Image (cartoon, rainbow over all chains, first blue to last red; front, side, top):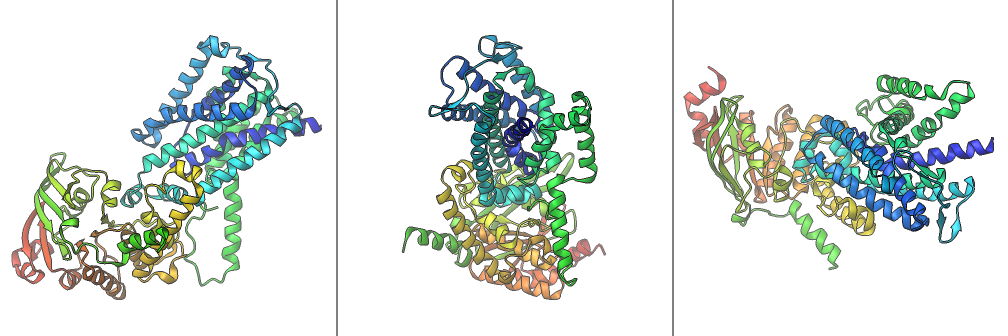
Length: 311
Length: 275
């Protein structure tokens, strides 16, 4: 039992890191990205290749390498954002998803082809071998805190203020001297680097990397985590990751087939789309907001504007 | 004076100091602007020099092309022919975010404040520099970013106070009255350091008190030597504020002169009021 709980924690922490940046992309840039799993996969293979070729398994080296590779890849795949507005980018990102994963599948000498790579040495940090589940949690928590801290920092600084403004009105933002496209590409690259870091952690834990695991369905799962949790709050993706990454376990608990995961995810997405546009975290925010309004006297009815994005 | 304070001082100067008095620095010149949308000729030859320190009114019936002229002047919309020069630089069709940083600010007919940001942040956003808005700097040079952000907030505070919204600076812009939102829209232009302000119907939808407040702000801006071009349907405001009026109809300037001269011409009044 404790083993299952630990595994659930590891999965949800890893996926939280992977989709955390995506929340800024979806929530503020309002673009849908279906290539997040591909970048996650590239992070995975960065570790797999470096470890299986005995280059190094030290996370302090592999993670920065993955950040550079994931960042550059995101930059290249993000550049079309300058030309393609919102909805059209979905198609472009879908294409990138396919190209990257097919590239990995066919680059057999590096990726090991469709079966991928497996059986590497366990990861380490400065000679400390990370073996047990608890060890992994010790590694994941500070990385998560660091990632969350950076995102909170970005949100508090002028860049984050511009993001909030961009979600409301791009023309008024341009009149203020800020170019929306650059902001978009910025958060997109940030989201990509975090996904690549998560990919390294994921593979170092699972000890296997196979291109098929990072397909389009994985990308949809990742964006579902953001939407179910709530795209305009940073705690939202964490909630989404916790629930959706461990969904197979919960289904197993009630004796449902693991193959029902997709169905349940789909139904959840529909429910969120209809009833909770700001996700589960948005529900909490609006509840707190309503309490505050009721707490105040009735003479201030003008404080009604959408606070959903504030959290 | 420390370097930091000097920075505050020089940037804050945008808000409270005479800005365009030296003339050439912020002169906005339009030459032979033509623009058609499809087969419709919207602007059919617009020539004008905006004189520094002068409030010019752009009037005319709906559909005359007033807002299109704003879009051509403030960037973003490329004319089919003709040029726009600002501060001796060719800015024809340059993107709005570039032109506005040069000191050519514009407001919108439908106000467009950012409802989810408070008043101060609305202005600080316009005051923030390119360096502050860099994601790489935000992450790798947190201290310097925080310092620059503080400077922008100071500039923003001055701008908010200039238009008399100091007591509401922490209120969300979306919760402000329409009149206050309009003032906030002007404050934002001060925050970006606009020496030339294009104001699109600043008085529309305001009651008498709102209009009074607005005129007071515009008057002070003019006295500081800023250049102002305003589109306005409220002819009392035009008469009161503008030293010069351009009467526009179907993309052409039909008349140019002092408000009294222009409004005295009966054929224009007929065009305007559809008599």
